[in-house]
Amino acid sequence: MERKPIMGFNTWNVFGENINEELIMQTADALISTGLADAGYKYVIIDDCWSLRERDENGNIVADPKKFPHGMRYLADYIHSKGLKFGMYSCVGDKTCAGYPGSCDHEFQDAKLFNEFGIDYLKYDYCYIPGFVKGKGRIRKMGLALARENPDIVFAACTWGSDDTKSWISETYAKTWRSTGDIWDNWKGTRHCIRQQLEMGLINYLGCFNDMDMLTVGQGGVGNVGKGGSTFEEYKTLMSFYALCGSPLIMGSDVRSMSKEYIDMLSNKELIALNQDTTTAKPFSLSDAENPIGAYAIAKFLANGEIAVGLFNLTDHEVEITPTISDTGIEYETKVTYTDVWTKESFEVIADKFTAKVKAHECKLYVVKF
Ligand code: GLA
Image (tube, rainbow, N blue to C red; front, side, top):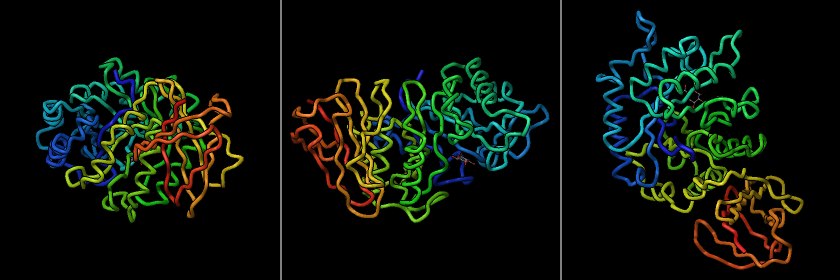
């Protein structure tokens, strides 16, 4: 059973409803040839729009034969033969967000079918919940249905943080939960995603991770949620925030045509190690009396006794951020070593006496030891 943030690829950000067998197989091949699979990106997840609009006479959801002529088991077998994992999608409501059949009142039947398909992961969306049904109960129900079929299936609730998800998600079988609304690929989308997570609190703990939606890193403004795209540094800011906050790293970009600079960004070993750190501690904000509005200093205890610190500038101008590192328990006059996770440069400072200049939309990510 997975105990770390899931890493993989999902079809929605670029391809939306334009999905098919060939695309999925090519993506699986690209995960291997780019080295992204070796870096940890193992889950190939088909999002919404994979089925016909109606269930069959036995009440089963049917894979669209035009998009998936050999059926889902065939795809699962192909993906597994590459050493990868296979993810699919359904919804709490009687319809999915795009209007295909959802699992409401078919939870046990669908869980059986999905297990027969050979899935390792189910993303479970939150649209079209009938008025008389409680979303929380339905998340519990599908989690239970899947766990009975196959406890190794990762159940990924996609509730966008709504209905106060954070207060009840640990009462379900969910291993990840969507904490933010849908991302879009430009600076506003990135900032909105980060702000939503900050406003809700950095809720995250071992075994159930807050999923901030698919990473737009390298998307370049193309496809379903491509709205102008982001700069290299803006993608770095998003990647750093996901790493620090332990969000699942689910790529939304087309990995078949991704440029080397983004393959390198997504495969960065230090970033991934931070994301996958097994500590049980949640990230937390360092006090911000000294810091300008829109600038954030966030820390996270790591399993080895070191501390990750991220300085994020969501404003449109350069700011100076002073992380109050003593909030972690380090004494004021202690000499500490900061190592920049991206550049790998190290320097020594006295705790609380360090101020970083951070350019607009950019961030600094450090590991601190003393
Ligand atoms: C919702 C989810 C998205 C995607 C779409 C599919 O909006 O939040 O991630 O799955 O539905 O319709």
